[in-house]
Amino acid sequence: MRPAPAIATVADDFNPLAVKGHNQPPPSDFDLIKQGIEDLYEEARNFADGEPIASQEMHDAIEELRTQLHEAGKRADALRVEEKRPLDEQIKAIQDAYNPLIQPKRGRVDLAKSALDALLTPYRTRIAQEKAAEAARVAAAAEAARVAATEAIRASSGNLAAREEAEELLADAKKLERQAGRANKAAATGTGLRTVWKAELVDDAAALDWFYGERPDAFRELIQSLADEAVRRGVRKVPGFVVRDEKVAV
Image 1 (cartoon, one colour):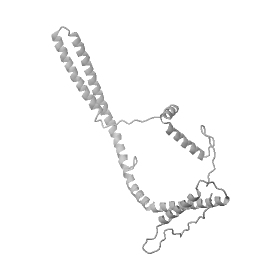
Image 2 (cartoon, rainbow, N blue to C red):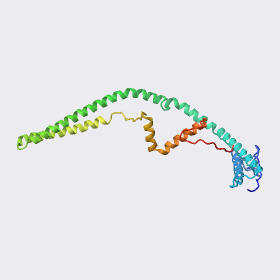
Image 3 (cartoon, rainbow, N blue to C red):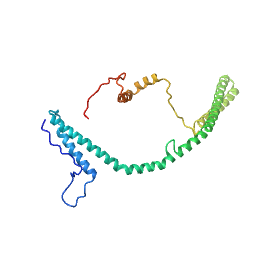
Image 4 (cartoon, rainbow, N blue to C red):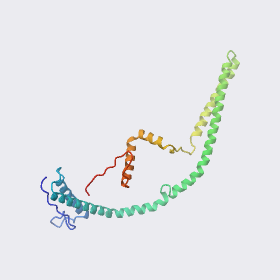
């Protein structure tokens, strides 16, 4: 590893963008912080060349560089927060103004719609049930007429007058079938209702087995996140995991 290059500290009044002349606007706080971080990044590239630390002097130089990067990052983040504060305040003011009106599930629009839905749903459900019952009645009558017409045709063999009557019965049965189709369509459309499917957990083990086979990657990500959270809380034995410690620079 080559000797450690000297690390120039980034003083508060350092102006890396200063130029001669009077036509250039003064650099902004962002410009100064950006240039300072870029300079420190280049210094880091000089050190991070693939060779390990070989001396205490080199270690101390890298430690100082890391400290400067950390502090520069804190200053950049503080400036970011300060610059976007007016926008955050504007967004919050807008959100606070509209939330009482249109906030999902809590604004006046959703609250009123929910209350009205509680009135509409039972009525619409009753009408839909009545239409479904009527459709079922017509369908049953059409099926009975079809069976009767089929039997009449079978029994009319050799009897022309009986065959004519049976054909009339069959035509009537077909009319009832068409009526049943229309009744069934009317019962299934224009109800003002929608079907909502909900999954209710009743067997934890069966659900875990199915999801593990259905989405193993997502399942592993979930249990990994749960294990990481447990370790952060101080748990040192997690079934199915090996919990080990690693040392990292701070």
